Image 1 (cartoon, rainbow, N blue to C red):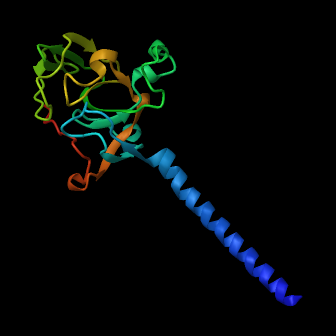
Image 2 (image 1 turned 90 degrees about the vertical axis):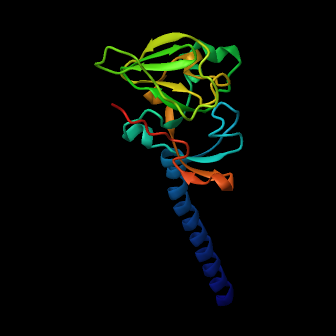
Image 3 (image 1 turned 90 degrees about the horizontal axis):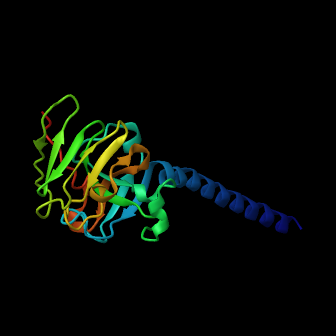
Length: 205
């Protein structure tokens, strides 16, 4: 009788130990997944040649909320067409779970001008547009001539593969609240492993 009792106590301890491990794992994994780090797999050629289909990234979900966003930074976000207040979500063209990856071109308060396949920026407090030098793009640039002035919480996003990217050129700027985060690590492919992949640092005047 004592023998079975000892076995029962041992089994109970094992079960409690397993439960404890699961709880600890959840306490670590859940915050990482939903609040800090989330995996992201690139799909499509809009950021080619810097990101290709199948590239496996880890996205820092705090960066876009806690720190200043810079021109040239790559972000993952929900496009305006996926927001609840957008009529475009009813067209059936968009996946409501989709996240996009693009590069920051225009910052809050700036005016962005797209003309003759080039990008021009008029910064806050300045009167003239200056052409943006973009060594990371794949082809000749944008398709639509337009001028957009950004609000205080808006960002103009473009893909690096201009002409083959569905981005702010079509659906306008995104809001800061749309931003999921910034890729901090590219894990795959192995020959392209690195931190803050493809971010470009502009030397602002």
